[in-house]
Length: 229
Image (cartoon, rainbow, N blue to C red; front, side, top):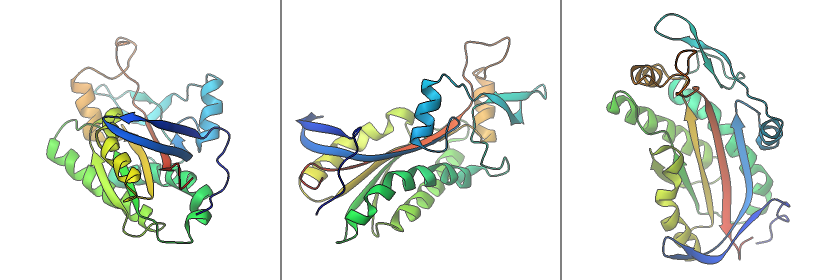
């Protein structure tokens, strides 16, 4: 299959060893949706420019004061839960897939989605249900481009994709998978999550600077074998 020339920033993973798995893979495209930008180039530009994107959000703390957050202001404040996670994921996935869809449309593509969400905070059952609902919605969106796509879901935050990456790369190497879509979605715009952070005294405030600013973002990369690229 002939695909478009890889962009200048495409990253080649040379023959090597990932968790004991010999690999030859190429990152052919990527996408992001963040509080800084609507896509990857915009996010990168604003990050390099030192733009902070912090603002008062729609949520308040225990004293009724608005929380300072980094959030996607194009998503309405009332859009929460799985619907909000999908709203963050969808444009990042589309940005990552759009450059390669034409080249991949000639034959059925066996796609595998490696999706990572935050580690559960608060009620673990509620967090698990939210993750399952959001993952199902994200998978349905991916299946609009790649029917029968497989899902690997982890709830470990930033490190989540690494847990399934080795087996996914091995599947790519053996020719069992044609495309890996690797990424994650994070959002603190969720009342139970904010309540858990507040209870643990982890929300940034004037009298609590050793804490975090709630935020949200989504990013994905498309990975194919070096032979397919």
